[in-house]
Image (cartoon, rainbow, N blue to C red; front, side, top):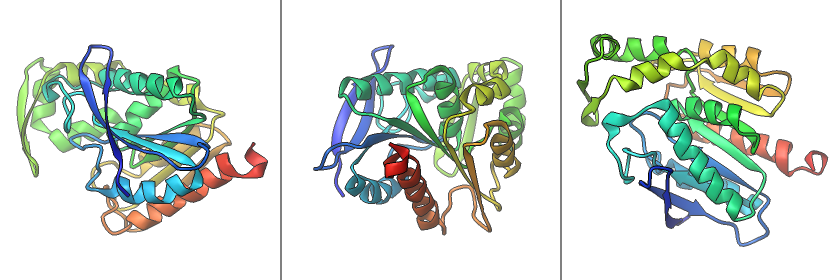
Length: 258
């Protein structure tokens, strides 16, 4: 399935590169997909696979690159959770202007953390989907970055090398994380439908993050821990997609949900 390419503006005037998948039938809702740390809107082309299952149901799928990531304008070094939340707000504003509803937010990993923060402040997010999402942010990043995280806490910018190359981060990344009250964000979204999918073999974001979210967000939450799946669901993509499709059908597209 081939998307339309779209460019949206965030509140700082930076261009956000986006992919838009639209149904030929009447729109029944829209899923906005937020990528993870060091990720991009394509999610290794998995976004096309997911859209191929959602668009025939009448759902719009919109995936975008946060400022400084992928093909969007900006400097990755300036990344903060608050900044990503503002980018997501700008995308939601554009979706609302098209007259599409309900809006469902889907976040992968750090994109899921962003979704939680945005949804806590924005009642337009009628549903929340969290894939491999951390809420114990300090623990997650201090473990994966180790010495670099300590340097950021000391107010020093760092250069980090990973499987995708070299990148820079400014201390505002950590100071912004430390200001977040994730318990309050979780409390603010309680009562809304939340789908949580996490792998038991996640080597980056521990599964207890998913269990914690589930226990905090209320009776309308649904948790799936997928045995043996890693952080990126490399061998379990279809399972993650099918669970998501089923939840959307039951929660937003069935006669009982209308």
